[in-house]
Each structure stands twice: as C-alpha cells, then as structure tokens.
Length: 428
Image (cartoon, rainbow, N blue to C red; front, side, top):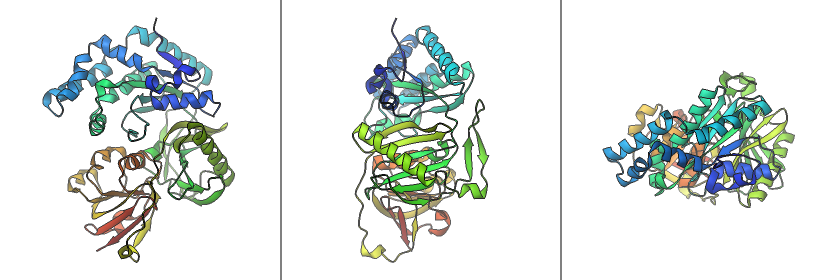
C-alpha cells in the first residue's frame, strides 16, 4: 500500500516536491534539531490520488484551458465542490485518522491544519495568505473538513488569479497538507533575517500570530544587528489578541491599554530569538522570513521561507521637507502616486491604476489590487504580515503600522512611499 502520511521527523518529509516547501522546511528544521512543534504531513501524491478517485482530472485541466470563461469557472467550481464535499478515499483517510489520534495522544492539544502547496514559499511566488490554515481543530469531522478545504484551496478564486499572474497551471501542481498541535502561545510573530540596512527585524504580538499575518494589529518591532545585539524596541498597538487556552478554541480577546503598549518580549528574549533567526538563515543558506511562537517551553519555529531584500532608494530633494509619517517597512521599493484614502472595502472601486492606497487594514483580501497600485500605506500591520510578503514579492512599496494615515494624508494628494525605510511623504 502506498504511504501518504509522514511524520515531520521522517527524512522523506524534507522533500519540497512531495510535501510543499512549507512542510518540507519545517521537516528539515525538525531533523536539524531546531525547535519546531511535532506533527505530520500528507504527501501531495495523496491529493493527486483523491482527484483521480473523484474523477476530477478533466475539470483540473479545463480551468486554465478556458481561462476567464464560464466553462473555466464551472471547472473550478467542480474542483472545489468535489474536494470539499466528497469523501476522502479510504487509502488516505484511514492512516490520516490514525496519525491524528496519535498526535492528539502525544500532545493533548487541539490541532492546526495548514495548506502546503508545492508552488508556495519560493522566490517570486510566496503565495502568502492565498491558501488555507485552520487552528484549534478538535473534532474528527472538523479535522476532515479542514484537510479537504486545504486541498480545495488550490482552486479558490484568489489562488487561481495569483497563479495566472505567475503562469502557473493548477493542474500541473498539487497540494500537501501540514498537521501540527496548536502552540499555547504567550506571544507570536515573525522575523526577517536581513533588512535593507543590513540588520534583523522581529515583530511580536500577544497570543497567536494570526492577528499579525492578517494585518489586524500593529506589532512590536525589534531591530537587531547581525550579531544579534539589540538596537531598538518600538512598542506596537496590540489592542486585541487571538487567545489560546489549552483544549479551548482560540478566541479574539480585548487587550488592556497598558498591555497593548507593553512589548511582548524582553530584551533577553529578543536577543535569543535573533540568534535563533541567524541559525535558521545559516541552515537554509539564504536570507529568511520566519514565523514563531513562544510558550512555557520557549520559542517554536512555525514557518521559514526565502526572503528577497532590495536596496534603499535616495529620495529626490523635492521630498526632503514634506510632511512625513513613519511605519513598518515592507522592505522593498519606492513609489509615488495619487493618494486614494479608503475606509471600507466597499470603496475599493475608487482605486485607480498608479494610485497609492491609503487604508486602515491591508489584509490578504486586498491582494488582487496590488497589480494596479503604485504603493500601499496602512494604519495596521507589520513587516512580517502576509501582505508585506506579497508586496516584497511583487515589488510594491508598502509601509504598514502608520498610525493616523487615513486622517492625516489628504485624499488626492501626491504621496511618496519608501517601502525600504518605512517612510510616507506627501504634498498637496
């Protein structure tokens, strides 16, 4: 019988062509004794077997062969409904449920089920925020639904649009799935092993890191030198957290004003995490972006992907004495354009080609407009959010965590966004 389920500690799980870079990088780090949660992954061959068992091969091929036509949409819908609603073939389901029971018995925790597409977490195609992740899964039925949803995520509209911009045919790729216990995180965040200035950047918020990934909070920002010595701590605005209590579904909780403005990590913890980030960079042999969490046992690495770094741009003299606001740099680009201040997604139709989008929250739902704008400024978010990753990948200047941006930057003014320095300037 073909084996479809592999623990992260199995050397076979380090193959990105079988399990996707997200799962494979975690498996590589686990096998190198870097601190990662335990877990297992589903071989992309399982996804392909499920498609074959459901008779969906023709629909898979039909999506890109009839791009943007009603027939293409019908094929994509058949793929989504088939993968979401049809039973998982017994050859996959039986060992999958056995692995789930074993992981629960070993950890006693709720589970996380995450997509690990073969095409994501690579230079030029990070797919940050484009697929699915489910946290706090308890029941067997919810677990099965989460796995099927991860498979189906390859055929969601936003993912298909993203693949089309990269000339990727979804029928030529596949989806792995990563399953791990939910870390009971005191704090979580991200890290960039190299900035344009040659330093390291860490971000942190209370509780689980989904609030950072979705751009919902402005995280603490820690800047460290390349020897992991601390340069500065800039407290963020973390007015809510996604709480994690053992054996309880994660919920959003309001954070007190004092706690919202208090750094999540001590200086010693920031230095410790900086050293861990350097270890990951050395292990992967390139600048990296990580996601992490800290619980009672210490730091855990949740993800690592390649990081593209761009040199900073010296602004023209005309901008030197203009009003400016500072924020979290997405790490790439310099752009100018007309400010389009948006306070609600229902106003997105106002954004025109070459505009600078000024908004409160830049979440993954806005990824479809990145191709038309000259830059993005948001009041929430940090340099390790999903949108920041997409901006770096696509060369879009972005500055996040710019408090008061929608009130202070006049709609229709000319704006310059320095995505490397994290500075926004404007003139009327």
